[in-house]
Image (cartoon, rainbow, N blue to C red; front, side, top):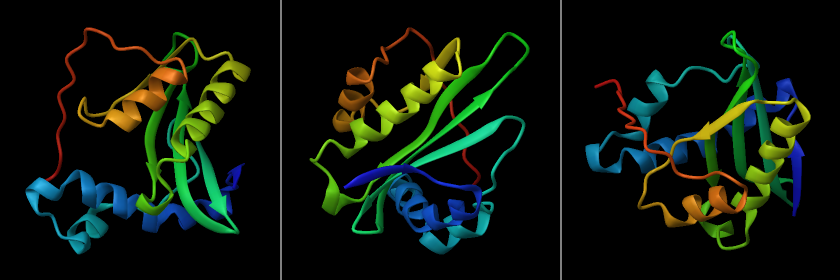
Length: 148
């Protein structure tokens, strides 16, 4: 199993796994995959910051990814683990942790002053991976909005 950083031209390769992730997150709303696909924009290299995608590959097959962003809101570089996903068949092998550790290595090397990640409290595997990688809970209220 290898962990690699995807080049810009490889970013579209994560789309099937990204759709799996978004579909699983919206299972209670019963959003069909086609609906998620219709509002999901094409994967791009940057927005007003930088996108970095680390991928887990098993014999060349993409089986997980960690998408992180780095940006400067005017107070120094900040980072975020925007998405972390490991396909069900490859879970339980610490791939999520390995992917998040790549993100934190990037954050350290770029001298990021603050980094965050958002996840559900009941996603125990993700919470454990984030904690092992050095993230800790805060007393912030996070509200979300999704298109209807």
